[in-house]
Image 1 (cartoon, rainbow, N blue to C red):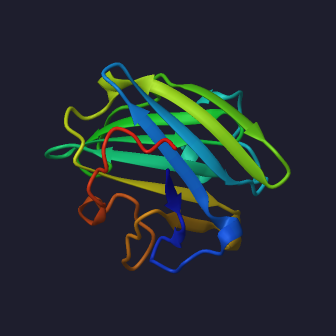
Image 2: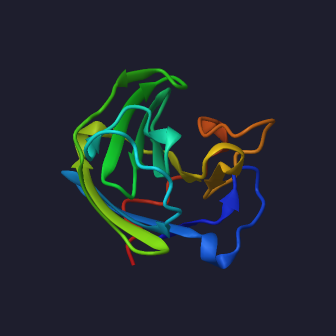
Image 3: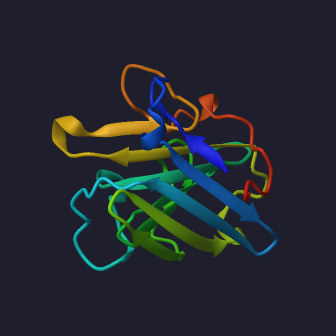
Length: 172
């Protein structure tokens, strides 16, 4: 498991605001586990499932970066909505709303999720990664990171700042 324990620009979070993300990757699928604070932001419109623009809501994101410009962005919400994007170049989506199985549950102050997606939706050789969390509305919007991506404003597509991929499993 890894922690999302900083603001996007590197300030540490208090212990109660830390989210945990784990995964296990095999030849067929990627399994992802999330345990995060629940802020009860308004859910996205529409039923749970693939949701364009999910980053505008309460969400945990996992970015997996391959060689060259190839990366996959996986977004999970506490309400059962999700978004999987394949990108070739920064913010250059070549496929969107890809299939993902997601089971999410909410409690008063935390939410948990387990997601499964096909290995075929990921870069062939994963070289780096990062995980993020977004929540809040308006002036209270917060952008949080596993590995900070400092700059003039939050930008989760600063791939050159991502840490090296730790391997196919962080489950514990």
